[in-house]
Amino acid sequence: MEGRARFDGHYDNMGHWGRGGPGRWGRAGGWARPYHRFYGYGWGGWYAPGYGVGMGYAADDVDRQIIDEEATMYAGADYGYAPAAIPGGGTASASVQGEIVKKKAEQPPKIVYKARYKLGPDADVLEDGKIAFRLTDDAFLLVADMNLVVIDEKSGQPVMELYPDPTLMWHLGSELKQQALGLSAALERKKAQLDNKSVIDSPDKAGKLAREIKNISDTVALLSKAGKNLGELPEDPPKPVEPPDSDAIEIFASVYMLKDGKFVIIKRKDGSYAYIDGRGIYADRAKSPLKTDYPDKFELVVWKYLDNLVKEAPDTKANLEEDIDSTKWALEQLSSEINDAKSEEESQDSKEAVRRITEAMSRTKNRHSAISSQLETMPDEIAAARLTMDSLKQ
Image (cartoon, rainbow, N blue to C red; front, side, top):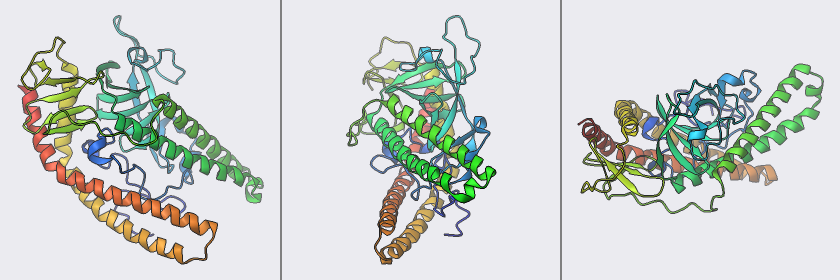
Protein backbone atom coordinates (compact mmCIF):
# COMPACT_ATOMS: atom_id res chain seq x y z
CA MET A 1 0.00 0.00 0.00
CA GLU A 2 2.61 2.49 -1.12
CA GLY A 3 1.77 5.97 -2.30
CA ARG A 4 -0.97 8.30 -1.24
CA ALA A 5 1.67 10.16 0.74
CA ARG A 6 -0.09 13.47 0.22
CA PHE A 7 -2.89 12.39 2.52
CA ASP A 8 -2.42 13.41 6.13
CA GLY A 9 -2.25 9.87 7.41
CA HIS A 10 0.45 7.33 8.07
CA TYR A 11 1.33 3.67 7.96
CA ASP A 12 2.03 1.63 11.03
CA ASN A 13 4.82 -0.93 11.11
CA MET A 14 2.48 -3.63 9.82
CA GLY A 15 1.84 -1.70 6.60
CA HIS A 16 -1.68 -0.71 7.59
CA TRP A 17 -3.15 2.59 6.60
CA GLY A 18 -3.60 4.87 9.60
CA ARG A 19 -6.18 7.56 10.06
CA GLY A 20 -5.46 11.18 9.31
CA GLY A 21 -3.96 13.44 11.93
CA PRO A 22 -6.02 14.68 14.88
CA GLY A 23 -8.12 17.71 14.24
CA ARG A 24 -8.41 16.73 10.57
CA TRP A 25 -11.91 18.19 10.53
CA GLY A 26 -10.95 21.16 12.65
CA ARG A 27 -13.36 22.59 15.16
CA ALA A 28 -16.10 22.10 12.58
CA GLY A 29 -16.31 18.39 13.15
CA GLY A 30 -14.75 17.16 16.34
CA TRP A 31 -16.16 14.51 18.61
CA ALA A 32 -17.76 17.17 20.76
CA ARG A 33 -20.41 17.24 18.03
CA PRO A 34 -21.72 13.66 18.05
CA TYR A 35 -24.82 13.94 15.87
CA HIS A 36 -23.46 15.57 12.73
CA ARG A 37 -20.45 13.36 12.35
CA PHE A 38 -20.30 10.27 14.46
CA TYR A 39 -23.65 8.98 15.68
CA GLY A 40 -23.91 5.34 14.67
CA TYR A 41 -20.69 5.44 12.68
CA GLY A 42 -17.93 4.32 15.00
CA TRP A 43 -14.87 6.44 15.48
CA GLY A 44 -11.89 4.27 14.65
CA GLY A 45 -9.20 4.60 12.02
CA TRP A 46 -9.26 3.82 8.35
CA TYR A 47 -7.81 0.41 8.98
CA ALA A 48 -7.55 -1.93 11.93
CA PRO A 49 -4.72 -0.27 13.87
CA GLY A 50 -1.36 -1.77 14.67
CA TYR A 51 -1.83 -1.14 18.41
CA GLY A 52 1.56 -0.08 19.56
CA VAL A 53 3.72 -1.70 16.91
CA GLY A 54 5.31 1.66 16.18
CA MET A 55 8.20 3.29 17.98
CA GLY A 56 6.01 5.70 19.90
CA TYR A 57 5.41 3.47 22.88
CA ALA A 58 9.14 3.15 23.46
CA ALA A 59 9.60 6.91 23.80
CA ASP A 60 11.48 7.97 26.90
CA ASP A 61 10.43 11.62 26.74
CA VAL A 62 6.83 10.88 27.63
CA ASP A 63 6.28 14.13 29.52
CA ARG A 64 6.13 16.11 26.28
CA GLN A 65 4.43 13.51 24.11
CA ILE A 66 0.91 12.23 23.58
CA ILE A 67 0.02 9.08 21.65
CA ASP A 68 -2.98 7.45 20.03
CA GLU A 69 -3.89 3.79 19.55
CA GLU A 70 -1.46 3.46 16.64
CA ALA A 71 1.45 4.81 18.71
CA THR A 72 1.59 8.00 16.67
CA MET A 73 3.32 10.77 18.59
CA TYR A 74 1.94 14.30 18.97
CA ALA A 75 3.09 17.35 20.88
CA GLY A 76 1.88 17.16 24.45
CA ALA A 77 -1.08 19.27 25.56
CA ASP A 78 -1.95 20.75 28.94
CA TYR A 79 -5.38 21.40 30.40
CA GLY A 80 -5.73 23.50 33.55
CA TYR A 81 -8.75 23.29 35.81
CA ALA A 82 -9.63 23.46 39.49
CA PRO A 83 -10.78 19.97 40.53
CA ALA A 84 -12.52 21.23 43.65
CA ALA A 85 -14.73 23.50 41.51
CA ILE A 86 -15.82 20.77 39.07
CA PRO A 87 -18.66 18.30 39.67
CA GLY A 88 -17.00 14.91 39.63
CA GLY A 89 -13.61 16.58 39.40
CA GLY A 90 -12.17 15.18 42.59
CA THR A 91 -10.15 17.30 45.00
CA ALA A 92 -7.21 19.61 44.69
CA SER A 93 -5.00 16.91 46.20
CA ALA A 94 -5.55 14.55 43.24
CA SER A 95 -2.55 12.32 42.61
CA VAL A 96 -1.27 13.92 39.41
CA GLN A 97 1.94 15.47 38.19
CA GLY A 98 0.31 18.87 38.14
CA GLU A 99 1.40 22.42 38.73
CA ILE A 100 -0.49 24.31 41.40
CA VAL A 101 -1.30 27.76 40.10
CA LYS A 102 -1.39 30.64 42.55
CA LYS A 103 -5.01 30.80 43.66
CA LYS A 104 -7.25 33.74 44.22
CA ALA A 105 -8.87 33.98 47.63
CA GLU A 106 -12.34 33.27 46.28
CA GLN A 107 -11.36 30.39 43.99
CA PRO A 108 -10.09 26.86 44.52
CA PRO A 109 -6.64 26.24 43.01
CA LYS A 110 -6.10 25.25 39.40
CA ILE A 111 -4.01 22.21 38.53
CA VAL A 112 -2.40 21.70 35.14
CA TYR A 113 -3.06 18.18 33.89
CA LYS A 114 -1.14 16.70 30.99
CA ALA A 115 -2.88 14.93 28.12
CA ARG A 116 -1.49 11.41 27.82
CA TYR A 117 -3.56 9.80 25.08
CA LYS A 118 -5.38 11.04 21.97
CA LEU A 119 -8.67 9.17 21.87
CA GLY A 120 -9.94 10.97 18.78
CA PRO A 121 -9.72 14.13 16.67
CA ASP A 122 -10.32 16.58 19.52
CA ALA A 123 -10.62 14.23 22.51
CA ASP A 124 -7.65 13.87 24.87
CA VAL A 125 -7.44 11.53 27.86
CA LEU A 126 -5.75 13.39 30.70
CA GLU A 127 -3.40 11.86 33.23
CA ASP A 128 -6.19 11.90 35.84
CA GLY A 129 -8.44 9.81 33.59
CA LYS A 130 -10.74 12.69 32.62
CA ILE A 131 -11.50 13.44 28.95
CA ALA A 132 -11.07 16.93 27.52
CA PHE A 133 -12.27 18.45 24.24
CA ARG A 134 -10.44 21.55 23.07
CA LEU A 135 -12.91 24.30 22.11
CA THR A 136 -10.75 27.42 21.84
CA ASP A 137 -7.26 28.42 22.89
CA ASP A 138 -8.71 29.52 26.24
CA ALA A 139 -11.49 26.99 26.88
CA PHE A 140 -12.30 23.30 26.76
CA LEU A 141 -15.03 20.81 27.54
CA LEU A 142 -14.29 18.44 30.41
CA VAL A 143 -16.01 15.10 30.98
CA ALA A 144 -15.81 14.37 34.70
CA ASP A 145 -17.83 11.45 36.12
CA MET A 146 -20.80 11.86 33.75
CA ASN A 147 -20.65 15.65 34.05
CA LEU A 148 -19.98 17.88 31.05
CA VAL A 149 -18.43 21.22 31.98
CA VAL A 150 -17.04 24.13 29.97
CA ILE A 151 -13.82 25.35 31.57
CA ASP A 152 -12.19 28.77 31.30
CA GLU A 153 -8.56 27.72 31.14
CA LYS A 154 -7.03 30.96 32.39
CA SER A 155 -8.80 30.71 35.73
CA GLY A 156 -9.44 26.97 35.71
CA GLN A 157 -13.03 27.64 36.75
CA PRO A 158 -16.22 26.28 35.18
CA VAL A 159 -18.24 28.75 33.12
CA MET A 160 -21.15 26.44 32.22
CA GLU A 161 -22.38 23.01 33.29
CA LEU A 162 -24.00 21.30 30.32
CA TYR A 163 -26.34 18.37 29.91
CA PRO A 164 -24.15 15.23 29.74
CA ASP A 165 -25.19 14.12 26.27
CA PRO A 166 -25.79 10.34 26.46
CA THR A 167 -24.80 9.83 22.81
CA LEU A 168 -21.45 11.46 23.41
CA MET A 169 -20.89 9.52 26.64
CA TRP A 170 -21.81 6.21 25.00
CA HIS A 171 -19.43 6.76 22.09
CA LEU A 172 -16.62 7.74 24.43
CA GLY A 173 -17.17 4.61 26.51
CA SER A 174 -17.34 2.38 23.44
CA GLU A 175 -14.18 3.84 21.96
CA LEU A 176 -12.30 3.49 25.24
CA LYS A 177 -13.24 -0.21 25.39
CA GLN A 178 -12.36 -0.86 21.74
CA GLN A 179 -8.97 0.82 21.93
CA ALA A 180 -8.13 -0.74 25.31
CA LEU A 181 -8.87 -4.21 23.93
CA GLY A 182 -6.63 -3.64 20.95
CA LEU A 183 -3.81 -2.35 23.12
CA SER A 184 -4.21 -5.29 25.50
CA ALA A 185 -3.77 -7.66 22.54
CA ALA A 186 -0.66 -5.74 21.49
CA LEU A 187 0.65 -6.00 25.05
CA GLU A 188 0.41 -9.79 24.98
CA ARG A 189 2.20 -9.92 21.63
CA LYS A 190 4.98 -7.75 22.99
CA LYS A 191 5.36 -9.92 26.10
CA ALA A 192 5.65 -13.01 23.90
CA GLN A 193 8.64 -11.41 22.15
CA LEU A 194 10.61 -11.42 25.42
CA ASP A 195 11.42 -15.10 24.76
CA ASN A 196 12.78 -14.36 21.30
CA LYS A 197 16.48 -15.26 21.09
CA SER A 198 17.33 -12.06 19.21
CA VAL A 199 15.83 -10.07 22.08
CA ILE A 200 17.50 -12.13 24.79
CA ASP A 201 20.89 -11.72 23.09
CA SER A 202 20.55 -7.95 22.64
CA PRO A 203 20.38 -5.69 25.74
CA ASP A 204 19.33 -2.77 23.51
CA LYS A 205 16.41 -4.69 22.00
CA ALA A 206 15.43 -6.04 25.40
CA GLY A 207 15.47 -2.56 26.92
CA LYS A 208 13.42 -1.08 24.09
CA LEU A 209 10.89 -3.89 24.32
CA ALA A 210 10.63 -3.51 28.10
CA ARG A 211 9.89 0.21 27.69
CA GLU A 212 7.24 -0.54 25.06
CA ILE A 213 5.60 -3.10 27.34
CA LYS A 214 5.54 -0.66 30.24
CA ASN A 215 4.18 2.20 28.14
CA ILE A 216 1.43 0.07 26.58
CA SER A 217 0.54 -1.34 30.01
CA ASP A 218 0.34 2.18 31.47
CA THR A 219 -1.84 3.28 28.54
CA VAL A 220 -4.26 0.38 29.01
CA ALA A 221 -4.53 1.28 32.70
CA LEU A 222 -5.22 4.93 31.79
CA LEU A 223 -8.00 3.99 29.35
CA SER A 224 -9.51 1.68 31.96
CA LYS A 225 -9.49 4.53 34.47
CA ALA A 226 -11.12 6.85 31.93
CA GLY A 227 -13.82 4.23 31.27
CA LYS A 228 -14.56 3.90 34.98
CA ASN A 229 -14.90 7.68 35.22
CA LEU A 230 -17.76 7.47 32.73
CA GLY A 231 -19.67 5.04 34.94
CA GLU A 232 -22.08 2.36 33.75
CA LEU A 233 -23.17 2.78 30.14
CA PRO A 234 -25.84 0.85 28.21
CA GLU A 235 -24.84 -1.88 25.77
CA ASP A 236 -26.65 -0.25 22.86
CA PRO A 237 -26.32 3.38 21.79
CA PRO A 238 -29.00 5.59 23.35
CA LYS A 239 -31.59 7.34 21.26
CA PRO A 240 -30.27 10.75 20.17
CA VAL A 241 -31.55 13.71 22.13
CA GLU A 242 -33.94 15.77 20.03
CA PRO A 243 -32.69 19.29 19.28
CA PRO A 244 -34.57 22.07 21.06
CA ASP A 245 -35.86 23.62 17.85
CA SER A 246 -36.61 22.37 14.34
CA ASP A 247 -34.03 24.74 12.87
CA ALA A 248 -31.44 24.36 15.63
CA ILE A 249 -27.88 23.52 14.56
CA GLU A 250 -25.53 21.93 17.05
CA ILE A 251 -22.44 24.02 17.84
CA PHE A 252 -20.94 21.50 20.24
CA ALA A 253 -22.46 19.01 22.66
CA SER A 254 -25.61 20.41 24.31
CA VAL A 255 -25.13 23.86 22.70
CA TYR A 256 -27.04 24.99 19.60
CA MET A 257 -27.61 28.00 17.36
CA LEU A 258 -30.64 28.85 15.24
CA LYS A 259 -30.37 29.19 11.47
CA ASP A 260 -31.47 32.84 11.71
CA GLY A 261 -28.72 33.45 14.27
CA LYS A 262 -31.03 35.06 16.83
CA PHE A 263 -30.21 32.79 19.77
CA VAL A 264 -27.65 30.43 21.19
CA ILE A 265 -29.50 27.65 22.99
CA ILE A 266 -27.90 25.93 25.98
CA LYS A 267 -29.09 22.59 27.29
CA ARG A 268 -28.18 22.88 30.93
CA LYS A 269 -27.14 20.17 33.34
CA ASP A 270 -30.69 19.58 34.58
CA GLY A 271 -32.02 19.18 31.02
CA SER A 272 -33.67 22.61 30.85
CA TYR A 273 -32.91 25.10 28.09
CA ALA A 274 -31.63 28.65 28.21
CA TYR A 275 -31.63 31.05 25.26
CA ILE A 276 -29.07 33.87 25.02
CA ASP A 277 -28.75 36.65 22.45
CA GLY A 278 -26.00 38.91 23.72
CA ARG A 279 -28.38 40.97 25.83
CA GLY A 280 -30.36 38.60 28.02
CA ILE A 281 -30.97 35.03 29.06
CA TYR A 282 -34.42 33.54 28.49
CA ALA A 283 -36.44 30.36 28.81
CA ASP A 284 -37.66 30.41 25.20
CA ARG A 285 -37.79 32.27 21.88
CA ALA A 286 -40.43 34.58 23.30
CA LYS A 287 -37.75 35.92 25.63
CA SER A 288 -39.40 34.84 28.86
CA PRO A 289 -36.69 36.02 31.28
CA LEU A 290 -34.76 33.62 33.46
CA LYS A 291 -33.77 34.67 36.96
CA THR A 292 -30.09 33.95 36.57
CA ASP A 293 -26.99 35.94 35.71
CA TYR A 294 -26.07 36.34 32.06
CA PRO A 295 -23.23 33.91 31.18
CA ASP A 296 -20.75 36.44 29.82
CA LYS A 297 -17.73 34.15 29.91
CA PHE A 298 -19.61 31.30 28.28
CA GLU A 299 -20.89 33.63 25.56
CA LEU A 300 -17.28 34.58 24.80
CA VAL A 301 -16.31 30.90 24.51
CA VAL A 302 -19.14 30.32 22.01
CA TRP A 303 -18.27 33.45 20.02
CA LYS A 304 -14.59 32.46 19.75
CA TYR A 305 -15.54 28.91 18.81
CA LEU A 306 -17.79 30.16 16.01
CA ASP A 307 -15.17 32.66 14.88
CA ASN A 308 -12.66 29.82 14.51
CA LEU A 309 -15.28 27.72 12.72
CA VAL A 310 -15.82 30.47 10.13
CA LYS A 311 -12.13 31.26 9.68
CA GLU A 312 -11.20 27.61 9.23
CA ALA A 313 -14.09 26.82 6.87
CA PRO A 314 -12.15 27.10 3.56
CA ASP A 315 -9.30 24.87 4.77
CA THR A 316 -11.74 22.47 6.40
CA LYS A 317 -13.73 22.15 3.18
CA ALA A 318 -10.57 21.52 1.14
CA ASN A 319 -9.43 18.86 3.62
CA LEU A 320 -12.82 17.15 3.60
CA GLU A 321 -12.91 17.04 -0.19
CA GLU A 322 -9.45 15.49 -0.18
CA ASP A 323 -10.59 13.00 2.46
CA ILE A 324 -13.57 11.97 0.35
CA ASP A 325 -11.14 11.05 -2.43
CA SER A 326 -8.94 9.20 0.05
CA THR A 327 -11.81 7.13 1.46
CA LYS A 328 -12.68 5.99 -2.05
CA TRP A 329 -9.07 4.99 -2.60
CA ALA A 330 -8.96 3.20 0.76
CA LEU A 331 -12.12 1.24 -0.10
CA GLU A 332 -10.57 0.13 -3.40
CA GLN A 333 -7.47 -1.10 -1.57
CA LEU A 334 -9.49 -2.88 1.10
CA SER A 335 -11.72 -4.55 -1.50
CA SER A 336 -8.63 -5.91 -3.21
CA GLU A 337 -7.18 -7.10 0.11
CA ILE A 338 -10.33 -8.89 1.19
CA ASN A 339 -10.54 -10.70 -2.13
CA ASP A 340 -6.94 -11.83 -1.70
CA ALA A 341 -7.61 -12.95 1.87
CA LYS A 342 -10.69 -14.94 0.85
CA SER A 343 -8.77 -16.69 -1.92
CA GLU A 344 -6.13 -17.97 0.52
CA GLU A 345 -6.33 -21.42 2.07
CA GLU A 346 -8.75 -21.24 4.99
CA SER A 347 -7.00 -20.91 8.33
CA GLN A 348 -7.41 -19.07 11.58
CA ASP A 349 -5.12 -16.30 10.31
CA SER A 350 -7.05 -15.91 7.05
CA LYS A 351 -10.37 -15.79 8.92
CA GLU A 352 -8.97 -13.10 11.21
CA ALA A 353 -7.68 -11.15 8.21
CA VAL A 354 -11.12 -11.24 6.57
CA ARG A 355 -12.76 -10.13 9.81
CA ARG A 356 -10.39 -7.19 10.28
CA ILE A 357 -10.65 -6.05 6.66
CA THR A 358 -14.45 -6.33 6.74
CA GLU A 359 -14.54 -4.20 9.87
CA ALA A 360 -12.18 -1.68 8.27
CA MET A 361 -14.40 -1.48 5.18
CA SER A 362 -17.46 -0.81 7.31
CA ARG A 363 -15.70 1.92 9.25
CA THR A 364 -14.34 3.50 6.07
CA LYS A 365 -17.79 3.52 4.43
CA ASN A 366 -19.19 5.16 7.55
CA ARG A 367 -16.39 7.71 7.52
CA HIS A 368 -17.23 8.49 3.89
CA SER A 369 -20.87 9.06 4.91
CA ALA A 370 -19.79 11.27 7.81
CA ILE A 371 -17.55 13.42 5.61
CA SER A 372 -20.27 13.71 2.95
CA SER A 373 -22.71 14.86 5.63
CA GLN A 374 -20.21 17.41 6.89
CA LEU A 375 -19.75 18.87 3.41
CA GLU A 376 -23.49 19.05 2.85
CA THR A 377 -24.24 20.85 6.12
CA MET A 378 -21.25 23.22 6.13
CA PRO A 379 -22.80 26.07 4.10
CA ASP A 380 -25.84 26.32 6.39
CA GLU A 381 -23.68 26.01 9.49
CA ILE A 382 -21.26 28.73 8.43
CA ALA A 383 -24.10 31.08 7.45
CA ALA A 384 -25.78 30.50 10.82
CA ALA A 385 -22.46 30.98 12.64
CA ARG A 386 -21.95 34.41 11.02
CA LEU A 387 -25.47 35.51 11.97
CA THR A 388 -25.09 34.19 15.52
CA MET A 389 -21.80 36.03 16.01
CA ASP A 390 -23.42 39.28 14.85
CA SER A 391 -26.29 38.70 17.28
CA LEU A 392 -23.97 38.09 20.24
CA LYS A 393 -21.93 41.22 19.44
CA GLN A 394 -24.97 43.55 19.60
